[in-house]
Length: 198
Image (cartoon, rainbow, N blue to C red; front, side):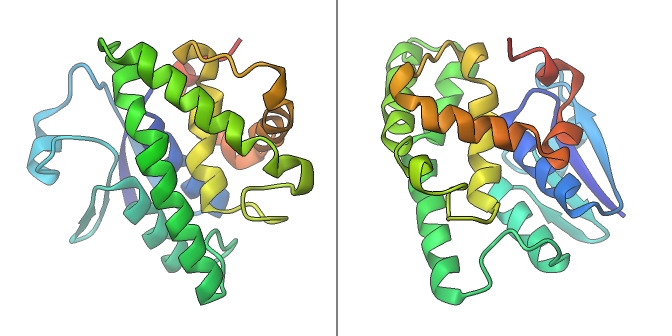
């Protein structure tokens, strides 16, 4: 049995929950209050952060590593491309998204002084992505993939974070609605996450 220690409002934990529900496998989600973390989180993850995946003797604590492990261990449906070249491109795109978009989420979560700048940067990057969805259904083409999993929690939280993308991002928002209607996404939402979106 896999146990996922997951923040009830953490967008990175949300990613892992989406993958677990997309796979439709046997697992347990252990909800963690981010403002009152149990001491055992610091014991199993030296960075004292969630998500953390525990399966027997295995402990993983980076969301992308957790998700790739789940994808390789339970290959259906496959969320990383089967082709090594496409898989490498997917990893590179994911790495770019981490550096250019997701790195700014912490400033929004903590309402830091840099939150306005973070909001603007995320907005600009997402607007740049919008034209992709006039030509294709998902981030990598026709198939739902790990890149869609990565961006979905952020798109769900746009209202919550006070990010308005404007009309030029309409193709991106149509794409977001497609992702939000997936059963795996719906099942992965926690009660606090459900109320984040108007």
